[in-house]
Image (cartoon, rainbow, N blue to C red; front, side, top):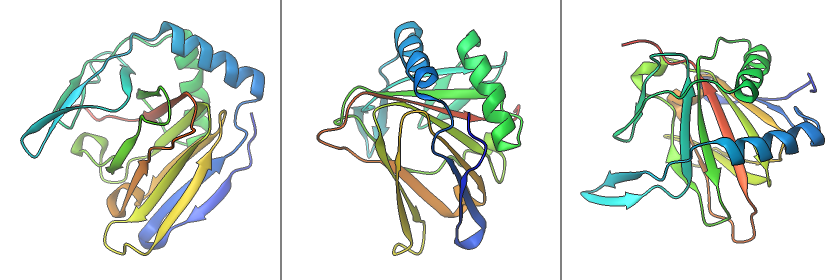
Length: 198
């Protein structure tokens, strides 16, 4: 694991730290294969403008006992930590300098799977949540834009084995997305976070 991130100081107090080679290739590949194989992936649906549409990726939720997370009308009861996820959680917490009690897994099966514009700003995450995002598998574009100043945008390519920490006021002032990419390969993303009890 590498310890020196690239730092992006964003307008209005946002902060990104990108550890591009956080996991070495062998560890990244082993984590990808194990998590892909052992995770009980779910295919969810959400309601947008009165229509029920399938979420364009597979998901799973792990966390400490009782750490329930609800977003887009989906209630997630935590699965117990696996040894692999528990180990990554400890390392991600250390890199982010924050306690993390849960993780959302997203499985992008190919370039048609995606994540729309959003912020991780649910009340249960607190006012300035720290999100530690681990990428495994194929690289994908990650795009970030200011919520009100649309010209202020940033695009990063997140390779397998990387860690992106979103901190400061990023979730308050910015939205991010993983757009469709025609030629993109299979990717798993782990977004570690701290969910406060109700």
